[in-house]
Amino acid sequence: MVIGITCYPSAGGSGIIATELGIQLAARGHQVHFISYAMPFRLAEFKTNLMYHAVETTAYPLFKYPPYTLTLAAKMAEVSRNFNLDILHVHYAIPHAACAFLAKQLLNGDAKQPKIITTLHGTDITLVGSDPSYYEITRFSINASDGLSAVSKYLANETKEVFKLEQDIRVVYNFFDENRFKPHSKQCMKSEFAAEGEALITHVSNFRPVKRTLDVIDIFEKISAEVPAKLLLIGEGPDTILTRRQVNKKGLGDKVIFLGNQSRVEAVLPCSDLFLLPSEEESFGLAALEALACGVPVIGTQGTGLVEVIDDYKNGFLLPVGDTTSMARAAISLLKDPLRLADFKKDAARISYDRFNSQKIISDYESYYEDVLNG
Image (cartoon, rainbow, N blue to C red; front, side):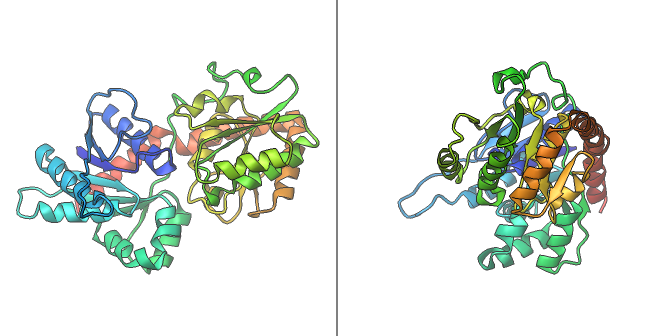
């Protein structure tokens, strides 16, 4: 198959999954074309069967903002025509699904039009798509797609409810590269971050309000009052400054390490004892999955897509949003019981591999591609 992939190239979950999907598909012999305004976050080196096409925008005085969506649609049509694409697989509904629809109209009359598959990742539905100013265009773009997938049952149900859809939504879970994300990595030295006898707790996100990074600091403060520990924060975003202020306000500066964005979190995660993800909303929780794959138990939130990733009381804990006291209690109970913690770590790696390894999920995507192409 010849597949075009469009995603946000930043360090968010949708861009990471789209990039990893393209890499895995190319490794299986498919020809993959990335179409975006920048090189995707994890696409750092040459791969056979994989190409990147930059979307260029020109700033004219007439335009207050460069019209990226129009140039993206034109580039999608150009790549489709030049490389005879079978599928345009767009990640995130706005604006990518709308651009794919427009690109298909530009190809009208050509010998071949690619099928459009839109994968929904979460905030494109729960935050952006439900905004009144985007609702109609999001609903139109979804309905105009030839295939629609979501990264969890939770998100599929949410999408149907928000947009009153009768259209089938295929659930294809997120995945991880089992050759990169695994426990006991030789790349990782815990002593680089924590002293002997200290627990290492990690959080990875884009530091947006929905991730509740201030809750991460609150939970860690409670943990560190009872258990010697260090906190590792990976990522950057709008709440980074607020998080730093909270760390300083609570006098935790010597216990919290800010690493910023990291392209290879698999070199750090295996050192961790616990992973905190107290998000207000998670459609799936890719960061949690990558932690679990490295043998790190996760403390997350109930009522989100994390219920499909974390087995409560087996490889982590699921607690109410905002209940930092219960989250800290759960963490402390685990850290103070080394044998139980060891069992949680083993289950974290085993369960994540059984359900979400790349070979299984990429085959699910290939099967879906075939279903859409066969109509």
